[in-house]
Length: 173
Image 1 (cartoon, rainbow, N blue to C red):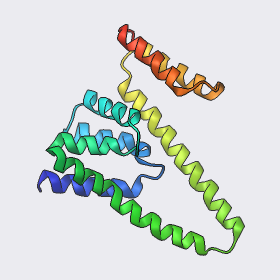
Image 2 (cartoon, rainbow, N blue to C red; image 1 turned 90 degrees about the horizontal axis):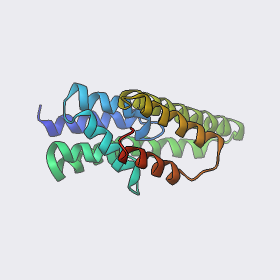
Image 3 (cartoon, helix red, strand yellow; image 1 turned 90 degrees about the vertical axis):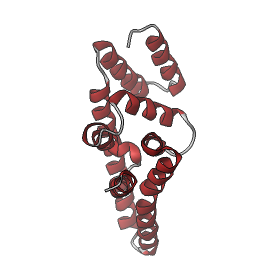
Image 4 (cartoon, rainbow, N blue to C red; image 1 turned 45 degrees about the horizontal axis):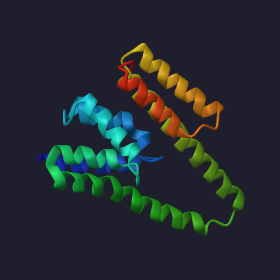
């Protein structure tokens, strides 16, 4: 099977389980692209994830960058289409079904359940990625401090990004 067809089929399948966005399936994407297919290495994955998070726009840019790495512009385009089309069609039809529902209690229950599922998947994904990318006690400490500051304060995330960048420049993480 050609690499472009493989990329298209695997990213299309991921699209159907990306409940909560691409960030919810990052550990699976990491496993596929780094360990199974060997498309990229772990550091490149971390770099692409950081670029995708820093850039404005949709959070599936990590997938686009992986596709670009594999096969240039055409690979990036195919990966982007593949990660978008199945879930877009599914959401379109689910939204139509949801809007036809008359029972407001059921609608609220579905909304709360979907929100809880998405949040849980994204948090689980973030934790799994942190476990795979952190390679020192300082990196784990930075991760835990960032979680604590995020949960217990109203600091803007740019302060945390700046703090992490300073630690990185100093060679502490």
